[in-house]
Length: 169
Image (cartoon, rainbow, N blue to C red):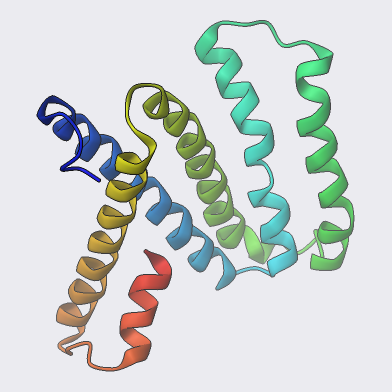
């Protein structure tokens, strides 16, 4: 995919794909860390906030004034998914703040991913962008697993450890 592009597009494609790969990796890691501290229902509500963050961020970046129609769909989606999930998760429990914080990081990174994808997709071929994103995401996940293993004084040898790297990546 990269070798079919003009050489002048290689560096922008690698940079853009790496940026998107890092954002996706951050989304995945933040969700994994959030799930260690909160329920899946509560995390799904918080992660759904990205549907509100994206239009708001796009309005700020394009200096548009928000209208009722531009916020109807995002707010109804967040509100509709939140009622039952928050009630089931027990909103009164304050010990879940760490999971909520990681969930919020995940939602913000997902919103950034969507916004930055839109910016890059206009100027770069989709196959090159997607290919570089996947390759960089996988590379960073493997580096992460090897770094954790080295920190713990172990070597990833089991299929489970490698599958964790590729799941996160």
